[in-house]
Image (cartoon, rainbow, N blue to C red; front, side, top):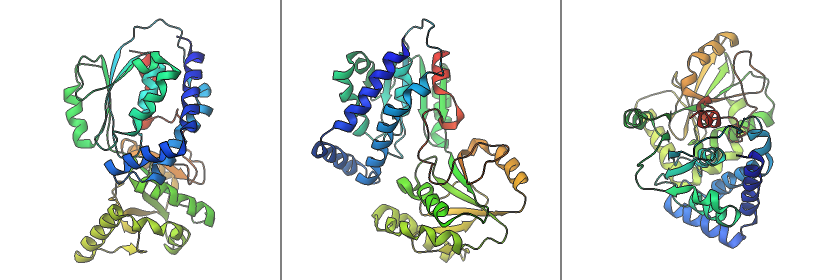
Length: 337
C-alpha cells in the first residue's frame, strides 16, 4: 500500500468537505441538530473545520511515521462509535481506511448524520475507499474491534469482544493546572477547554488544579465571555439541576450563573460543573496525575511539565491526529494485526 496515494485521497476528501455548498452544509448541520440538540450548528461547524484542517494539513506528517510496505491482508474492523461530540468517531474510521482495512461502522444514535454524509463525498474521490465502509446495525463477522463507550459499556465490550483483538475506550477527561501567573488571555483560552462542545468531550477540562491561595475571581472574570452557554436549554437544565442539588445539600460551591466550581477530588464532573483542588507541590501533583493517567485524556498547562505531556490553554479540542485517544497508537495497532 502506497501511503502517498492514501494521503492524496484524504486531502481530496478535505477539499471536498470545504467545497460543500453553504446551503447544503447548513441543511446537513440542521439535520444533525434536530437528531441531537447538543450538536448546535456552531459546534458542528467547529468539528467539521477541524477535520478539514487535519485532512489537508496533517496527513503527510502523520502517516509518514509508519511503515506501510509490508503486504497485509485486508481485515474487517468493527468500529463502535461514540456520539458525545460531533464526528468523534471519524478519526478511528480514517485510521482503518489508511491501513487498507474494511470498516464495519456502528454509529451512535446521537451522531447518525454527519459521518455518513462525509463518506458519500468519498464515492467520487475513491470508489475503493468508499466501498471499504459499511454502516451496520449490528457488528458481525469482524476480525478486530475499536469500541468507545462509558465505563459501564466498556465492561460489556471487554466481554463481548474478548475473542478478537480490540481497543476499548472508557471515560476520560481533561485536567488543567493553574500557576497563578496566567495572563487574562490564557485563562480566557482555558474557557474553550471547559466549554467547547458543552464540556462533553473526553478532552474537555473537568477539573482544575489551583495553587494554594488562588483567588477564584482570577478564573471567573476572564471566562465571562462564555456566559451565553447557559442560553442553551440542555446545558441550562444540567447547570440548574446541579446548582439546586448542591444548595439543598448545603455544599459549598462558587457560582457565576453559568458554571459551578466545586472542590472535589474526583476528576470527572457533571455538565455545568467543574471540579477544583488546591496543590502546594507541583512535582507531587505530577506524580499523582501520573497515577491517574487512566482517567485523564489530556492536561492543560501554560508551562511544560517534567513528567507528563501537556497542551497550551485553548488547545484541548485541537489535537493533532497523532495525539491518540487514551494514548493508544491506533495506526500502529492496526498495522500489527
